[in-house]
Length: 260
Picture 1 (cartoon, rainbow, N blue to C red):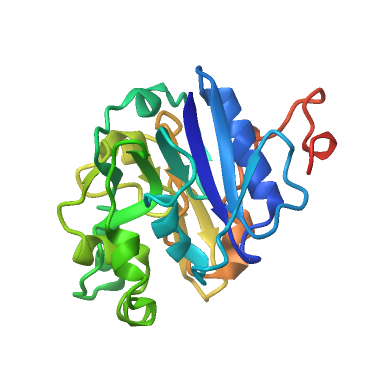
Picture 2 (picture 1 turned 90 degrees about the vertical axis):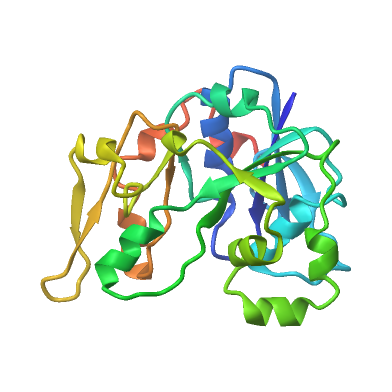
């Protein structure tokens, strides 16, 4: 069995995101699986999802909980896949499920951030890692990331914008990256070598700032679409336009009839 995990903390994402993630996994996973949601609020999450309460002794917030999920303290043992709640699963997950991870943590190589640097016309250092999708085997992996972090969490949370930066700069050599051809970014495609992103029509949105428009990519052949790089809350609801069919339940499998 494969263990899929997600994190719902605070109010940024509600139970609907967890429920639709379950639907997308169910449609695209050919083997037995369990979705585990790590959260402090399980209300309205469908009953098929296993709820893992966040441990109170750690006092973590937001994405920093990922350090606990991928640590040796995590209660679920075996092969695990983590998904952010804002990803969209477009195609079958079998390649990801079968991928051999050994004793390593596998994350994403965020080369699409080079496109961001070009667009804003600045020379800045952005982390090249991304934890929207992660793969590891909690039965064999030995992790020191959480142990190091909790010795001085305020220091690390002040020093780094997020857990991705922490992984890259504090834990080099303790992770590898997943195949880039599985994913793409809704905002940036992938990078300048990703010719597939130009093979499909893109969606253009007026973001309400004069003549400024936002180009959004849609590459249906990829396994997963990542919704990274959106800064304006005003357009969040529109970036999912045209993706609803990936998680819409059938009449016989409605979310509202299977909740905690």
